[in-house]
Length: 147
Image 1 (cartoon, rainbow, N blue to C red):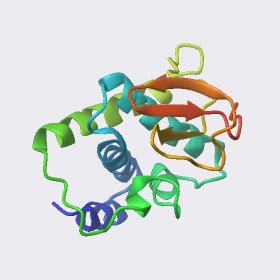
Image 2 (tube, rainbow, N blue to C red):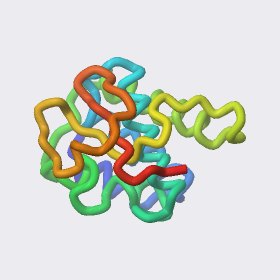
Image 3 (cartoon, one colour):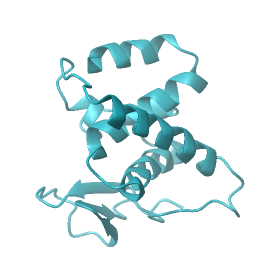
Image 4 (cartoon, rainbow, N blue to C red):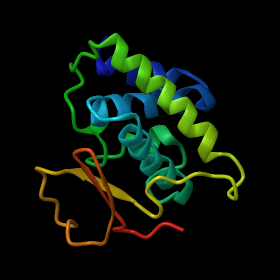
């Protein structure tokens, strides 16, 4: 299925169904080749940004904001072609949401305060900000300390 179809579908669904779809799409595009821990950390950054509100009021708005996450950067013609990776991304998105929306006390954060991440080969302007963690090929940064 094409990325454009997934984003179109998310625009038709109620927000409670659209947000996990957008989050799974982001996990798939950004981290499908990473460990479960790395994929959960990517999801956590998107959920933290949504909670903060500066990037959008819904997870879909956050991950489709221009030049922030892969859904707004990758060609709409991109094909999601690995059913196994897609299924895992969906499982991770739902689990990450369940964990994130739990009361703050029991919330298990993998990359506390991280608002950005980059693959090791990237050189973003904010790469000099504090590193929260490196998981697989992604490094997580506290560019905008959230919470």
